[in-house]
Length: 163
View 1 (cartoon, rainbow, N blue to C red):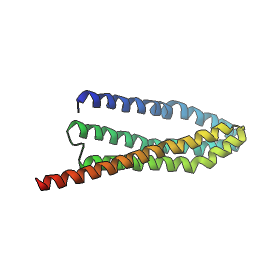
View 2 (cartoon, rainbow, N blue to C red; view 1 turned 90 degrees about the horizontal axis):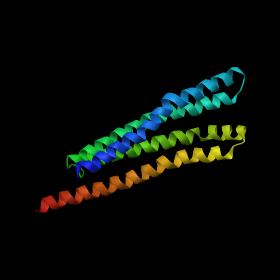
View 3 (cartoon, rainbow, N blue to C red; view 1 turned 120 degrees about the vertical axis):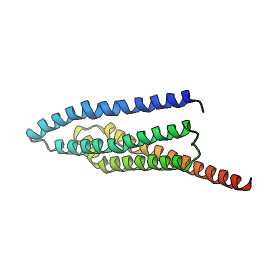
View 4 (cartoon, rainbow, N blue to C red; view 1 turned 120 degrees about the horizontal axis):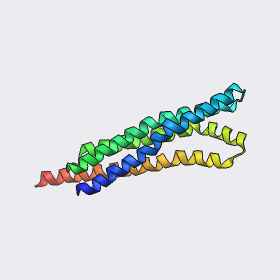
């Protein structure tokens, strides 16, 4: 594969990571400050916001680890190691990270429902469900690619033994 196509994918991975970093550095602390002010005024919903913010911060760790593994996968492709055990391991780690993120947001879903009920915003619950299913789709896709790659490696090794 040409290096330019993997370069494009590397840039795309960087552009995927930048908004999440900006969210963690700028928007979430601002929301935490507003929740802190609401907690000082006696609002019980502020503690629900704290829980959601904690889940969002914790989910950034597996997100960036999955981005790192995608960089590794692209470097394996550059080195003509796409059909190797290393690629299968990277896809497995990406799958596990996506499952962890989905599980974290699944655990936060009751808090999102409380917040949506308090603000009378049913669309918020829908957004919470999207945050569960998007990483789940990525996990399923990575699992399918992992299995296909594993089978391709097995077929390749059988062919190498025959010749």
